[in-house]
Image 1 (tube, one colour):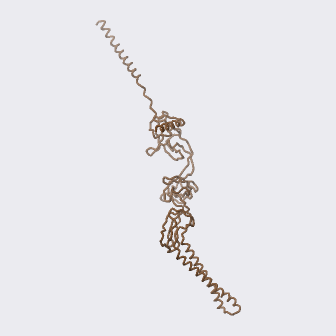
Image 2 (cartoon, one colour; image 1 turned 120 degrees about the horizontal axis):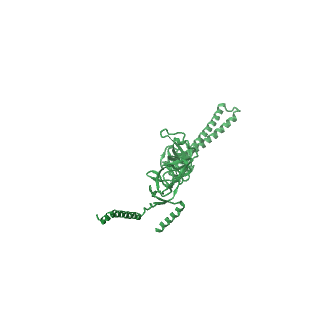
Image 3 (cartoon, helix red, strand yellow; image 1 turned 180 degrees about the horizontal axis):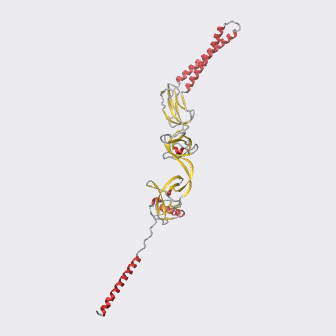
Length: 387
C-alpha cells in the first residue's frame, strides 16, 4: 500500500465527521429560524366580580285564586210583579242605596190607596164609638143606662180602636211593598252578574244581580302546612297574576284548618282596591310570595349567572385568564342580585357580564369596570357612526 493510499483512507472518516457536523449546524440554524408559537388571542374583554354577602328577604311562595272579598246576592222581595226597568249592567260601580231596577207599581199604588181609605173609615168609626162611650160614662152615675148598655158602648170603642190599628198596619205593609218595587244596592260595590230581564214577572226571592261588596278582592293562597306557622295577619305579600304588575297585599287571616288531602291551608290576602282594575279579577290564578323575615346570603349580579340547559352556571376566571364553566345553585333574588346556594367559593372571580358569548376554556382579557365603561361607550359610538 502506497503512502497516498494510506492518507486517503485516514482522511475519509474525518470528512464524514465534518459533513455530519455541518449537517447538524444547518438543522439547528433551520430550527432557530422557525417562528415561535403565538400566545392565544383573547376571545373577549370582560370585567370580573366576586360574590358578596348581603341581607336577603326570607320569603314563602304560594299559588292560589283571586276571589271577591264578599259577594251580595240582590233579589226581589215583591211577588208576581213585572220588571219595568233595569238601570245597571255587569261591571258598573254602584253606591249604597242606588236604584238598580224597578217593578211596575200600578197595582201596589191602587192597593195603597184602598188601604188609606180603609184607615180613614176606621178613624171615623173610632171617633163615633169614642163619643158614644164618653156619653155612656157620663150617664153611668145617673143610672139612666144599664150596665150592659154601658159595656156595649165601651166595647165598641175598643173594637173600633183595634180596627184602626189593624188598618194602619195594613197600610204600612202596603207602603213597604210599594217601596219594594225599587231594587236598591245594599252596599257600595261592583256588579259582577246580572240575570234581570225587562218584562219578566218574577217570584219573591228571585236573584236579579250579584255584586262584589266595596269592590274588594282577595287572594286565597294555598300554603304548605309547614309554612303556615310563619305567617301572621298584617304581613306583606307580593301577588302577581298572569303577566300583570305585582300587587302589594296584606294578610288578613290565616285559616285555622288544613286540607287533609293536599296538606295545604288557605291564607286570605287583601288586595288594594286602587290600581287593581284591569290587573286582577275574581277567578284569576295568581302566584305570590310572603315576606317572613331576612337572612344573609352569598350573591352575584344576575348578569353573571347564565341559564343553560335548565341549569345555572357562572364562568370562573383562572390565573391564566381562561374561563371555566361552573354549575351553581341559586336561591333568593333581591333587585339585580341573586343568591348562590352552592358550587362557588366566596373568593372566586367570575365574569360579570357577557358570559353568553364565551365557552368553557376561552381566554379573556380582564379589565376593571372603570376602564371597561369608556371602551364600551366608544364601541357604541363607533357602531352608531357606522349606521
